[in-house]
Amino acid sequence: MSALPNSTEAPDTPRSANSAPLMPSVLGAQSDDAVRTASKNSAQRVVIDHVEKWYGDQRVLDKVHLTIEPGQFTVLLGPSGSGKSTLLRCVGGLEKIDSGNIRFGDLIVNSTKTHVAPERRNVSMVFQDFALWPHMTIFENVAFPLQRPGVTKDHRRRVVDDILERVGLADFAARYPSTLSGGQQQRVSLARALVGAPAMILFDEPLSSLDAHLRERLRIEIADLTRESGSSVLYITHDQVEAFALADTIGVLNDGQLVQVASPELIYREPATPFVAQFTGVAGELVGVVESRDELGRLTVRSPSGVLQARFSGAQLEARANVRVFIRSAPVRLVSPTSKECTLAGRVVVAAFRGRGYEHVIELVDGQRLYGIFAEERGSRHEHIGLHIPGDACIAFARVP
Image 1: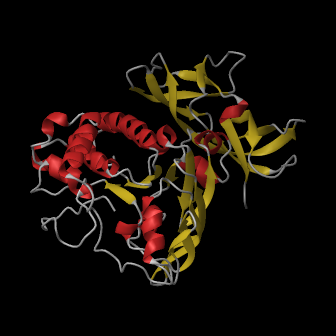
Image 2: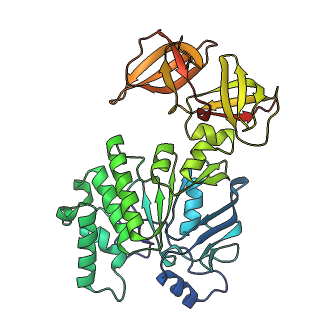
Image 3: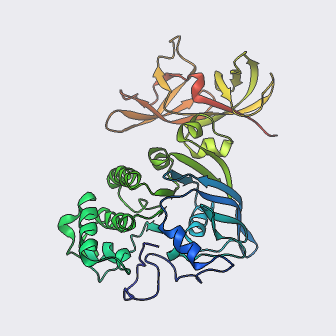
């Protein structure tokens, strides 16, 4: 595994870079030749097949099933404690599993009887704490994964020089990690992960410790460089903006269960559960009763705040059904409360400047609040205002008593 621990151990200690101490090489009947052959292949399909993981009497992964196609950028999205890091560590070989299996191509790398060591899986890891060797130069940190038989010094130098140029750190090769900013150190970590052309790169919330302006820049670099490399990617985050910006496919985890796997667009437009809707960003939630349903399945819902249109996620709902309506903020517009476009009325609680305009908090007539409502002009505090809320912005779920 192409990664390094954030310790001061000498580089020749028997550890995978950026990893826990190496696991036993292989537990089971698979031959060393099979493992070596798999490690030389390019990106393969990775199948996480109904994996369970327990810590004592707590189940942290509950029959998780996920397929990652070769070259695919997959993001695991979920709150702290949802099982994201544990699943990533299972794929990387830093954790054993309690049931199910994980396959790279046709090779089982994790099961109850088999465990291929992390350094033999042809994967790299990038962590949020950078995990660079403090006593090694930037060049030496990046070159570490290439210090293996068959790689000449000239080839190693060419490859490292090239990757440092691509991440904008060619002039920093002789410096030490402590002299670099957080964003520069994370670029070093990314370069080290890419330098060995791994079949898969695992990212454990790599941007969470960086300032907001750095996160956006590094998101672009990660997306560009990893896709250019052809490696498959498994990336974990609790930030839905980050997930939508990076992913080909998003898997949403909640309490150890993978509750939805889909494209970012489908996750946003058709969340499978109220949790997915809430976690991927809503202005607010209203409760109401279905008044009617048209031939296209669109609902008319009466709430204490007023009547609005909604689309339903799930089985069909009949009239008089109780629902929860989640409202996405992006399509909502501020309008005059007397306008024909006005769906619901309220008043401005606060407006926050966001550079290109203002985000508003609006209190509706029944006291419910909607957050993150954007407008180019600032609404005055306590100003009575109308909201145009298109039906596509509203997602209804059956309300369980």
